[in-house]
Length: 101
Image (cartoon, rainbow, N blue to C red; front, side):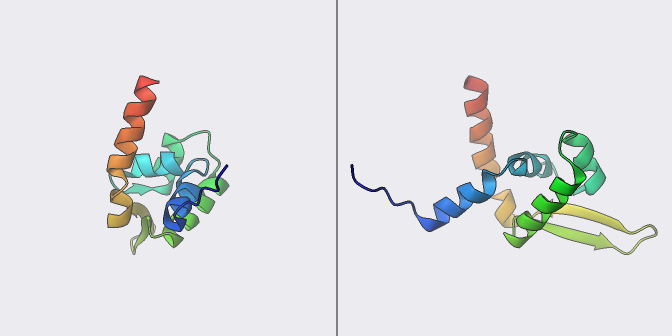
């Protein structure tokens, strides 16, 4: 059997997006910017600690950006970057596949 080598970029994408909750976070943010609490409500079975971890990973990968608005109280929103928005066709195809199977 011959060894199969994956493209490192492809492998990295699957490593990131294959983590639990990451796909759901991206899916929720495809509808527009959201506050932490909004996402927490939309994905109720995910702990706040896990949401924070995933946000940090997605920010580091430049999939999302964190906006801090100097209001009282301070408002923080998370939004997909252009790179993150580029995942929309992928998410749409995954949704189609899930609907069929």
